[in-house]
Length: 379
Ligand code: BGC
Image (cartoon, rainbow, N blue to C red; front, side):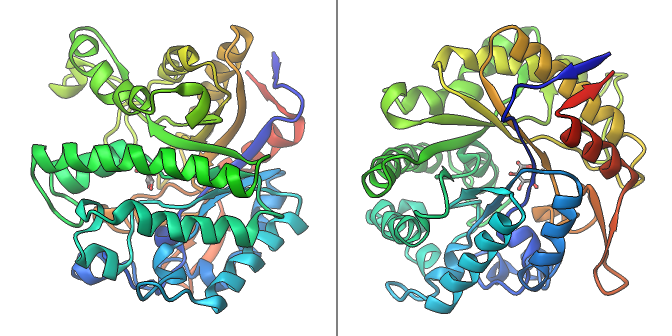
């Protein structure tokens, strides 16, 4: 059976600057060897080649992030050469008919900002807004879709609560403080972007998860809805929701007695979860883009089934009335998976780290290319 997606559906893949570009100096690179992505995939120099691969996959959109630390390496000093670099990146996408979805902040921060106290600094929101406004002013003629911030929930959990990521804080109190700042910052940026570029579409991405059974009662609001609810006036403060869906949690999974298939990260594969999470987001009455969905699968043995099964459920959600307008696979190419390093392989395209960072499209990319071409998935 062929399941057709709506006309004008966006098909793409996603990346983030620090994970792919290489040679970035920021709060992560200065946190010690383990956190330094080094040359990563050298996407900074090879973006044209990578976008050619996306085009070959029949993508019509691409999500990436701008590295604030490149643009404003020293407080208040904007680097025009780096702004021009991102202009070339965006133009390279447009030339290939790939609609740019631009994330303004994807986890990493300029060192000077982190040294001031990062998001705990009283001026944090204004610093970020100054950078964000500059980006929108520079690129407003080229970019319509803006993501203010990627997964504030994951950032808060890893950087402020569990202490896995810079600034390695383990404090409930600070987590709550930063949460408040991020919510206000998102609202400010939403307003600011619209002032500069009234027709733009501004959203946030959320790592939402399906909770099963008793976990739903305890965690659903806290994890899935707290931030979206805090951006109180839904109509005014986001034009779309970016859903990043990877996992579901059940008691069996937490107790490690689940028999479900898992990814190389050990994450349980639950395609039906994407349907439930999408239905659950319907309450906000906003268009939804799936801004990330994917798996670590070095052997590429599970990726095809993963993509098809998830898309089947996305299609059902659309049939059942959810306004889903696009799907971005995570990721276009293998990349630096934060504190897990280069081992997990999320790419539709393999990066051969031992052989000059050679790009080798995985077999699954051919299947994804067919889906994008036909705007349909065959089940
Ligand atoms: C993040 C990506 C990350 C992916 C896989 C998402 O939470 O936005 O940066 O690589 O998950 O873990």
